[in-house]
Image (cartoon, rainbow, N blue to C red; front, top):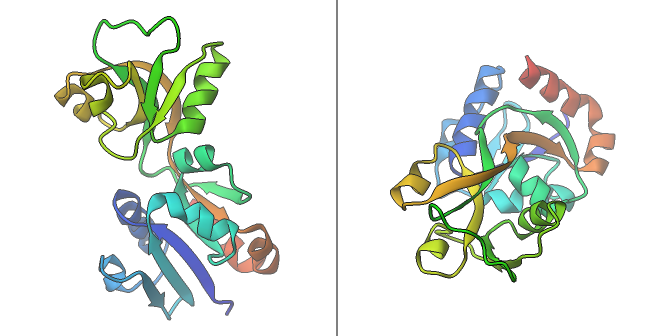
Length: 204
């Protein structure tokens, strides 16, 4: 059996993906959920899991330290890495949207947009012929309009609760997001039979 290394993001995507793999009949260890461990073996399946931050999964897959991985479409769009996207797992549904304080217009000169998705944000505003200044933030993006750092934010929305709690409203929906199964192109060529079998089982 070919040994496969799988990169998985910690958090919500992990929980849903774990459930999906178990439902597909894969025999996985329960301590996979042990947040202190970064590498977990599933000897019965010949899997080795690397548990990491969601943003790092495509990096591991592109560089071949992981054969396959599970990543949100938001991360894939933002990073544009050289990987194969094999399957939409249809889990962790959400979308990327622009938001800001209610009834506020954008600055006519160069509006400021705060986001952790600089690429997605620039592309969206460019597609509308708007020039904006992108301010890259890593956490609590909602703060930006509240403290006058930016007129709009571009961020992930799942229920809209966080926006509401911070007095923000949604302006434009940019793109729907789900989690995808991705593969390293070389690994896919060398271990295609094994990887295709996983894709088929997950698809069912």
